[in-house]
Image (cartoon, rainbow, N blue to C red; front, side, top):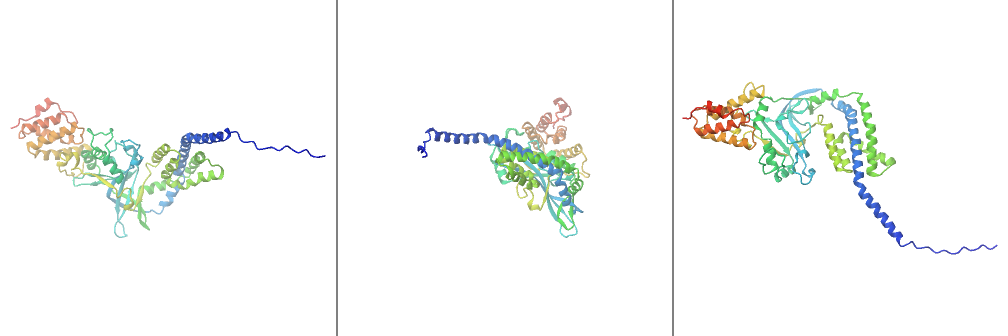
Length: 463
């Protein structure tokens, strides 16, 4: 039986709309990817950040204390270290500042650094640079408040001939150039506003009387150092070794595990959102970054930034908070943070108070004052004696200037000169111009305890 032949078929051309549908689908997928990318980055960044924070906590309570214990076990010798150079390292990257912002302080950090000299039986004295806790900068920050490099490790600035601290900031050339070429923010405490952010920074921290009181009541202290007798050049603060020897707690490994498990799980989820990978490749991408745990505070924000810059900035702040009171570095002097940076130095006979506070030559009493009230009394006594030796015209000019500075919100030193103004009012040898300037100054002195009729009663008639 002959097989019936099948009829031949010819290919049917795709309808004209098929290619357009395919193109529309491709474009739609591309647009969907573009639209969803920020959301994916937001979710991935959140998971990477908080997975990383859990892992940072696991590291800090488990492996790190054990490694520190082993590292500092040979540090059995001790020496007293004398601070020979010190500064506050100001880290500010103008590129990190949001566009159009002038309020730069919240995007900056400050770290105290000191070069310490110590001697032993090895020959010439050695020097070691130590940088301590890294803190967020703010417009309420005061340099004279900083008394420690880290808990129980003293810090001090160099002292001048008056016994006052010579405060110093160091910064990068990039930061200095930005401060010199931008106006201050409207958050400045100085009114009227200085011309540049640099001038505003200088004047904000130009507080010679506060520095004097703090200096005279805070003696310079040595730093007890610990070192390996075989390697004395590697000394660290002895408190670091004490903390390391007391920080090992085997129960910490239980907490490390409690933090590590969710940390790895959440980090893996973040990696999946970020890369779209699965299986062995995803595990590799999750576990490989853990090799950077000792440098996690620098590495994690960079990793998170691939997903979302805002989460990266938050991560930087959170990791800084976790290590705020434990962070320190010890190095050769030349390797210290901003050792060769641009310097901003406050000398107490310079700046806006140079012709008031700066014209008096003070001498630290022996013994040094125990309280700030006693220090202020000693400073007033010395200032009164020297101002009393000026002629009437010089005294009148001084008190008028102090009153003008007070009105301009430059009010750090006025209370130092109240006794000198009272002595001028009681001095019949001072002329009427000096009396008038002293009285106007006292009526508006910071303490505000002098009324005009009260001053009239104590005023002597000028000759």
